[in-house]
Amino acid sequence: MKAINSLVISGREVLPLVEGGKGIAVSNGLSSGAWAAAGGVGTFSGVNADSYAADGQRIPQIYHGRTRKERHEELVAYAIEGGVTQARIAHEVSGGRGRLHMNVLWEMAACERVLIGILERTKGLINGVTCGAGMPYRLGEIAAKHGVYYYPIVSSARAFRALWKRAYFRVSDFLGGVVYEDPWRAGGHNGLSNSEDPEQPETPYPRVLELRNQMREYGLGHVPIFMAGGVWYLKDWDEWIDSPELGPIAFQFGTRPLVTKESPISEAWKRILLTLKEGDVRLNRFSPTGFYSSAVRNRFINELEQREHRQVAFTEEPIGDHSVPFSAGLRGRVYYLSAGDAKRAEEWVAQGFDTPMKTPDTTLVFVSAEKAREIRDDQAACMGCLSACRFSNWATNPRGATGKKADPRSYCIQKTLQQIIHTDDVDDQLMFSGHGAYRFASDPFYSNGFIPSVRQLIDRLLTGD
Image 1 (tube, rainbow, N blue to C red):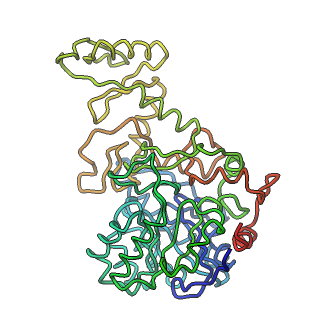
Image 2 (image 1 turned 90 degrees about the vertical axis):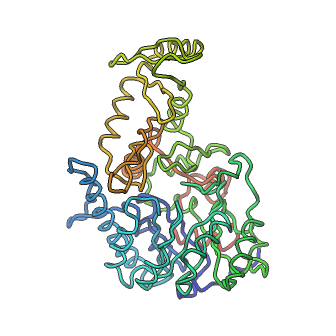
Image 3 (image 1 turned 135 degrees about the horizontal axis):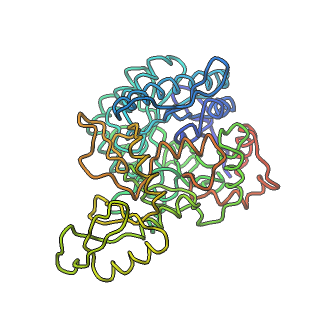
C-alpha cells in the first residue's frame, strides 16, 4: 500500500483519516477527542448530544411541555447544551492536536438554530461542521460567519452542483472539503435518489471522479474529498491514494470506530457488531425522514417489515372490488376490503393482530392492541425532533404539521436512538450500521473479541489493515 501523507484539513496538516460523525450520542467528545489526539479528524455528533449535571451524571432528556411546540423548544435547548458540552470535552481530550468537527443533520429539528446556538458558545473549539441528510444550502453561510470550515455530505456530483450554484459559491473560502457518502454502503440515512436502484450498488470511483471534475470546474481541485461508506482496509483503496485524477482524498470511517474503547455505544452493541454476517445490514425505508437508511436486521427491523406486510387497501364506502365490510379493533369502524384482503385480515386478527391503523396511503396495517397503544403514545409524545416527520406528522412550520396523516408504518426515531445509546437493548431498538460491519468477524485485528483504543485503531489503519 502507498504511504498515507497528511492533508491540510480545516486549516491544519493532519492525517487524512476522519471519524464519521453519526447520530444521537454515538460519536461524542471522548471518541472524537481521542481521534483528534491521534492526529486525525475527530467528529462528534451535534444531534441531541448528551449534557451532564455538576456531579457528572448524564442529564436525561425528559420533556415536560404539554404541546409539541413546547416540547420542541425543550429539545432545541437540550441539543444546544449537549453540543456545547461535547465540544468542550472533545477539545480537552484532543489536547489541541488534530482537528475537531461537529456533525449535524439538515433535516433535524431547528438545525439552523441548534448549529448557531452551539457555534456561538464554542469559539475556538470546533474547526469544522459536516452536514448531510438533506440539502444544507445555508451551511456555508452559517459556518463562515463563525469562522469555521464546512463539509457538505453528498452522494452525487449533481447534489454538490446544486449546493454550489445556489449558495456555496458565495463562501468558497470556508469550504473545507466535500464528503462523498456512498448511498449503498454507508450506515445511517442514505442519499439514494429516485433514479438509483437500492439493489444495484454502483462503484464509487466513477462517481467520485465525476464529483472531482465538477469541483475542478469551480476551481476547487485542491479541496479534499472525503470518501465515506464502505471504507475498511486502506489497502483496498490504494489506487485512490495520491491519485492525480482524483486529487486530495481523505478517508472517513463510520463503522470501525464504533468498536473502540472510547466509543460510547454499549458493550452489548459492540459484541453484536463483532458477530455480524454479510447481509445482516440492509437498506430499508421505514425511517420517519422518508430517506433510505441502513441498519442491522434485528427484532426492531423484523417487526417493521412484518407490520408493513400486514397491510391492505380499503375504502370508506363500497366501491368496485372493495365491497366486503370489515370491522375490527375497539372502535369497531367498518371498512370495505376486497374479498381476498378481507380473508387475509381475518387471519391476522385470529393471530392477535386485531387492531387496524390507517395510513396516509388509504391502507390499513394490522397490529396488536398493545403495539397500537405504543404507536399512538409515541405519536402523542412527539417532541418535533425532525424538520418533518411522517410518523407523527410534525413539521417545523407555523402549523406544526406536515398536512398528512401520521404513518403507523414508521417509528419515533428520537425514542429508539436514545434507547439504544443509553441502554443495553440491542434487539428492540434501531441499530444503524454501515454495510461493511460484517468484516469485524473476519478481521484478525478483532480476534478473540479484541476491542482496541482509538489510537490502536489508527495505528492499524496506517498499516493498510
